[in-house]
Amino acid sequence: DVKVTQSSRYLVKRTGEKVFLECVQDMDHENMFWYRQDPGLGLRLIYFSYDVKMKEKGDIPEGYSVSREKKERFSLILESASTNQTSMYLCASRGGEVRAFFGQGTRLTVV
Amino acid sequence: QKEVEQNSGPLSVPEGAIASLNCTYSDRGSQSFFWYRQYSGKSPELIMSIYSNGDKEDGRFTAQLNKASQYVSLLIRDSQPSDSATYLCAVTGGYQKVTFGIGTKLQVIP
Image 1 (cartoon, rainbow over the protein chains, first blue to last red):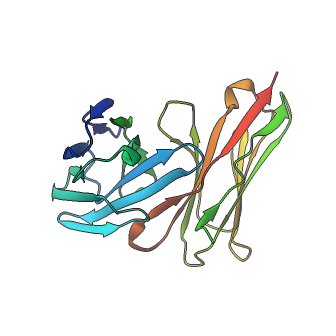
Image 2: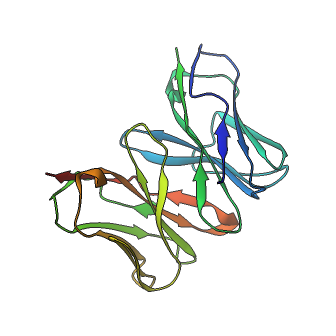
Image 3: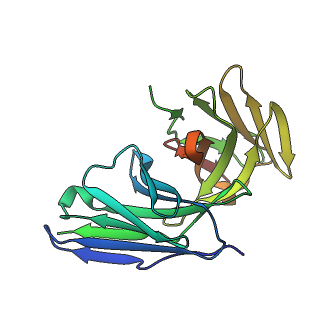
């Protein structure tokens, strides 16, 4: 089975902190994605990557950056966390079989 | 216009009835179409994928695609209380970008 693992299930950070969310997949997938999910807004794409060191902005990239130094790992970085970034963050990966596999999600609270 | 549009619901159906979920998309170049189910507090899980016009059946689920109308639907026959969840429509476009709709909350009433 494909496994997509996010580093934390729950995270509490202070306003202004730099926050790293890590995602690792074990299926050699080319494509990886970061979404955030908020009530009433659904899943919104923050950034995605289609290859190592390649990244593309999604629909809401402001306040975020990403890093993909190795194929299996895709990191989401909140440069200076703010309370409006409190959300559920979901990582997904996708390979030749077309469907996307999701991690278990990280519920981030910024206080 | 949103790239992928769904009615947020809730859609309430009695147990044993057919639930019909709908989705429209704006990018005519979209290639792949998916339905995910998401239970509260859980990650989305794939239940159906469809790539060409027409119907695709898998057990109690049927996905329908009409590229000319830019329309995707999911039918759930013999709905069960365990089908109560949010159903997300997803569409793949350029650079393999996967875009999701807001999701439709389905409630199956015993």
